[in-house]
Image (cartoon, rainbow, N blue to C red; front, side, top):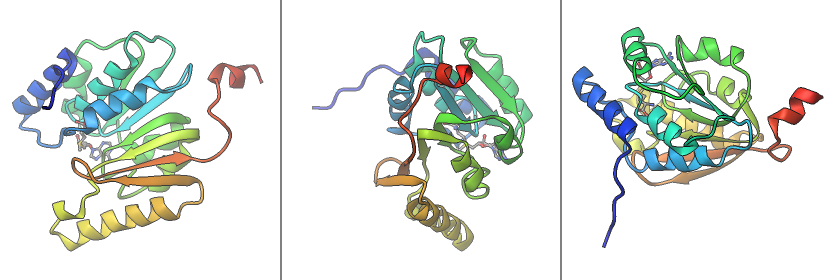
Length: 203
Ligand SMILES: C[S@@+](CC[C@H](N)C(=O)[O-])C[C@H]1O[C@@H](n2cnc3c(N)ncnc32)[C@H](O)[C@@H]1O
């Protein structure tokens, strides 16, 4: 027997926005609950980044994982101004920031993160190094849409293979492939143990 918990209200609203926009890029099970689970594990004063907001489905799952925490921050970046505006108009905690802009241009300006969900072409198929650079020591990177079977275009297949190889070969990372949903790769940035960001501020 399988059980399924209710979709959180904010996720439901983001899925409704996806229908209204005719947007087909929203993250699919099991990514949503996985994002919530990983978000719940970020350290005190942790920082979370999503590349590619879409209609806010992933953002809503990440916010769900943070629950009522007011120490951790969640930032998301969307190139499309109308999508970003629609997501921003929803009811978010003050800890959530929706940036409008190009992920590759913004990445070097945003600082380091304990969890990154790379869900746009920018910062994944191109500029993956910028995304890895933005991971804090012990930080987690979740990349989806890695199942080659989804792609027929040889350039898209080559891009996915490049990402897979880069994540596997990068000495800064420990990576695992998960054959679930649209195909996931999860990587941890090696380094010091995760730290409390307040310690950094008092250095
Ligand atoms: C797969 S969808 C994101 C889905 C969303 N993360 C979710 O969980 O539902 C990819 C999004 O990336 C956005 N995007 C495309 N190029 C971008 C760029 N250069 N910078 C930021 N966002 C970009 C697209 O407009 C699209 O909304």
